[in-house]
Image (cartoon, rainbow, N blue to C red; front, side, top):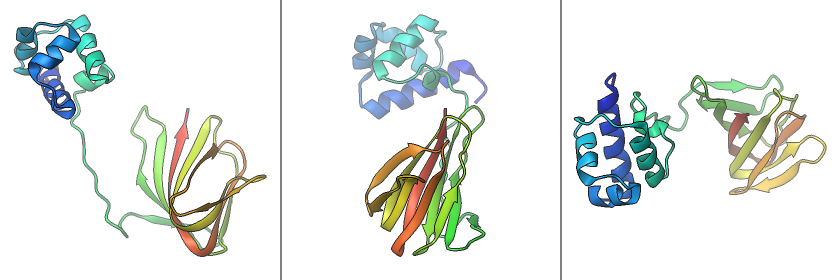
Amino acid sequence: MSDPVQAVATGLQRERARVGWSMGELARRAGVAKSTLSQLEAGSGNPSVETLWALATALGIPFSRLVDLEPVQVTVLRAGEGVAYASEAGGYLATLLSSAPPGSRRDIYRLEVAEGARRESDPHPGGTTEHVLLCSGSALIGPADRPVELHAGDFISYPGDAPHVFEGGPGGALAVLVSEQR
């Protein structure tokens, strides 16, 4: 979508539907005239930055969500799809589920770790935090000097910019890892 006015119209319609508000309710909460909102949603208005900020604030979203020219993409990876990267030592597979788009700094992985397989990671760039949700099995995860035993359903966050470890427990483990850089 290359037309900024149409991007605002689409963004307003999408976000108003997301929160389930009528046009009148959004106008009231944002302190803008309902007729102004109607024109904006119809793609016939030319909003001021103040109007857009008021609408974004009322909707509880960043300003950019109303003016983003790129459509939201839906990506589905079925179990077993995606390219799995194996550890040299074996027993550890990492499948990149979602890479960070330009300007964003996070990656999401599905990890399959065999029983007893141990992956010792060197520090990543400064400001990296790893978040792991253990989906099944058990594992020893976290800082190399004080890993934590986790079981299915457990979650851990730890500094990824320090040495860290992931070791599959009895029966192995399946996990989702989000690597975030600040």
